[in-house]
Structure formats: C-alpha cells, structure tokens
Length: 470
Image (cartoon, rainbow, N blue to C red; front, side):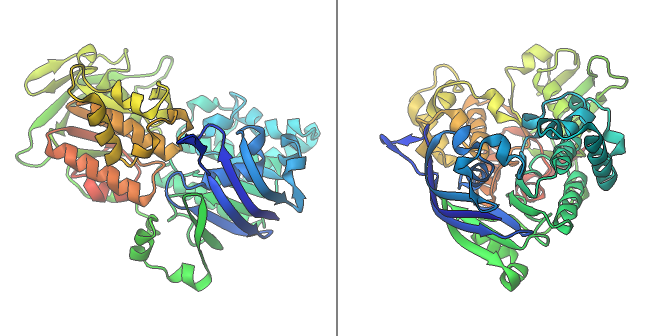
C-alpha cells in the first residue's frame, strides 16, 4: 500500500556549516494494506517528514531535495498532483486548526468531498454515516472555533473519515488532548483499524495506541534504528522503552494523581477576584473569588479540554484585558499591567511567540537589559536544552518539540519570578520531557514559582509537587 525505497530528503532551509543537513537518510519502509504502523523516536527525528512524503506535501509544499522513490498504491507520487494523492491519503495534523477551511462543523466535514466532486446526495450520506459511527451528532452545526481541542480533533478525524481515503496519516494527534479525549481518539482509530484502513501514526504518547498497532518503527536522526513487532512489541518493558527514549505504554489519568494543592508551611501567592468570560458567552470561563498557589513550587494544573486552564494562565500573566482581578505576591498587589513584568508564559502554540530570524537571537532578546556576557548566557541556556546545534536556524524551521524547548529557553532567559507553561511537553519525546522536568526543578531551587498546564502524567510524577484541578 505504501512503500519508501531508499528515500533521503533534506529541507532547503536547513543549512549547517554551509552544507545541507539530511532530514531523512536511506529510508526503506513498506506498509501493507490494513496495517497500523507507529513511527516514533526523539523530536526532530523525521517522523513528520515521512508523513509529508507520503501525502505529497514534500516536495510540492515543503521544498527540498528528494532521492529514492515513494510509492502509494503502487504508483510513485512524484507523478501525482496533491489533489490526486488526496483521493488515497487523508491526514490528521497535530494542530487540527491548521487543516480547517470552514467555520461550521458540518461544512468542514463536507469540504473534502466537495473538492472531489462527490454528489450532494452522497456527501450527506457519508456525513450521516460518519456522525452515527463516531457518535458526534452534538458536534454538528457548531462553530469550530467554539469547540474544545478534543472536539476539534474529533472533527478533523471525522473529515478524513467522510473523505473515505484508504490510507490515514496521524501526526501526533493526541498531543494536546486530555485523558478522556485521548480515549475517544483511540476509539476512532480502532474503528478505522476494524474497517481495514491502513494507518500510519507519528506519536510520542504511545500508551493509548500501543496495543492497537501492528508494528513500531523507531527513528533517530533521520534513520530507522529499530523495529518492534509481534512478541517483542508485546513483551517490551517500560525500562527498555525508556532506554530507547520512548514514552510509557501505561495510560494514567492526570486528574487521578493525588498531590495536595497546598502544604503546611507553604508561602502563598493569592489570586483574588479573577473573573473572565469571552465576549458574547453566557457563562464565565474563570470565576475565582480567591485561590492560593504555593510560592516557589511546581504546580500542575489539570482538567479536561475546555475547562479554562489556558484562560486562567492568560489571566494570570495579564494577556486578557477583560480580567480585572489582582495577584498578591510577597505582600504586594499586582494589577494586570504589573503582572506582565513579573510573569512569563510559554504558550501552547509556541510558534506564535517566536519572532526573530535565528534561534540564538530569540534567546538574546529575552535576556534582561544589562545582562553580562549575553551571548555566553544564551548559549548555555540553549546547551541545557539541547538546542546549541541550531543557533543559526530560523525558529519556524524547527520541529514542534524543538520550538517548545526554544520557548522554554526564552522563559529561562527572561529571569521572571513566576513562570507559566501551557502543555510544555506536548511535542516532546521521553528524554526531552525529562530534560524539561529537570530544568523546571532547577528553576524551582532558585525560587521560581512554576504553574504548568499539562495532560502529561509522566511530567507530573517527574517534577510537580502540587496539583490544581479545574
């Protein structure tokens, strides 16, 4: 069904010491009809690049040099237009918002079929079938941008299902989903597998699909280094997976982790009269008369998609002008404007807060004015985050996980006393998750207060001492 024959690829924008750096090297991979294949490995290892080769986005959208052959259904896709390949291959991206073309959910489900010239009667029939199959009638005729992340991901999956492609590509589809939404995604994938679809998933969070996959292919630095299948896959231990740099295969609901919100002896940061609602909304997203947070600790903020976790961070750091509450820190009252100088936030979509032309410049502009040996300080921060090899790269050319680490580097460079992180490990492999956790623990030792919105149970166990459920 899908075959890569001795494929190598290098992105045109990637240059290291005046030579192009290969993103994929001599990949030979065959995926049979009806097989469920997992691509996993460290951030930036080439998982997404393989998916882009299969769906034709490389080289028609992402430019670079390709050698070897990529065959889909026995035909080399280099001779196909993107719309022709879309008849065979459907893709669900990590951020579903990047693949939406309509505001209305029902129209979004119809969009792919309309582009294929499918008759109106057939389109309605397919939509009805998918809605019933996925039990999502309550999501129809809704504004996509009013949905939670989990609901958006369900719409993205449903739009691929309606299109009826036999090959489905999933690019870290669970990265920003809560536990319940991840289980929902698992059920959608299981339905595709039972229907005989060919599925290729690039994922770090492997627990929810480990028992569904037929084979796991592990990549590192653009090469296939190992395959796990059959008995070896079924009997591999957690410790062995960690040594390979992979996440756990055990699912855990973060809301079931029992850490206190406050302990005796904690110094308190008080949030008072925080109330916020989106314009036109019937109810407040944030309504907090008073909330105590442990100063100098790492507090995990957990809860379902759409519960208001990100909105709470936006209010704390002063991004939401309509939130008029105050924050009391070390006996001083901080208004919304004052909090901008006290708090640094790493956003969930880190691409929205990277502005410069190089990775090094991004960290340099985050350093406080008057910092001695600015370049040396910036380089040390990048080294601590395993980014010192990318100093001259454009931030937007990095992988999702690398962008995440760069945003954290900027937060560290800022020296702010309160650090807010919104899903900081959503695109990270096990090793970089551990590095991020260790950096957070080092910052805590220096007195930084950290609030981290997360669905990552491994991160919580690794570094968080307090939990706030919303």
